[in-house]
Length: 79
Image (cartoon, rainbow, N blue to C red; front, side, top):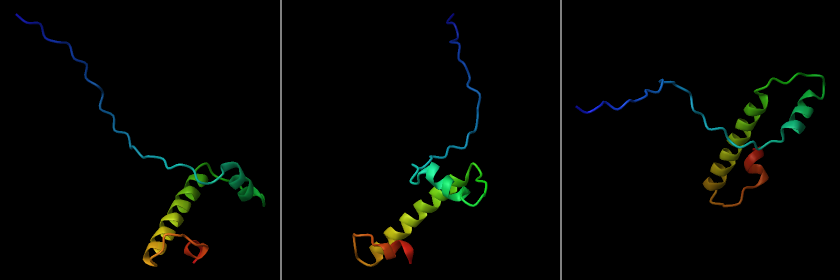
């Protein structure tokens, strides 16, 4: 009679997997600027600002493409 192979069952854990985007802002300099007038900065503020910078980049790329250019100009970001 063949022996049953012992198998280990892994505990099913559900983890929210979110890929962190590379930080585009300099954390220490940004925190310093935010604290400049005596404000406190929460731990997730830099992540939120980083997400906003990624959004700005995306918008600039879309605007540039819509205008038939391959060069992003300041007014693609600021306008």
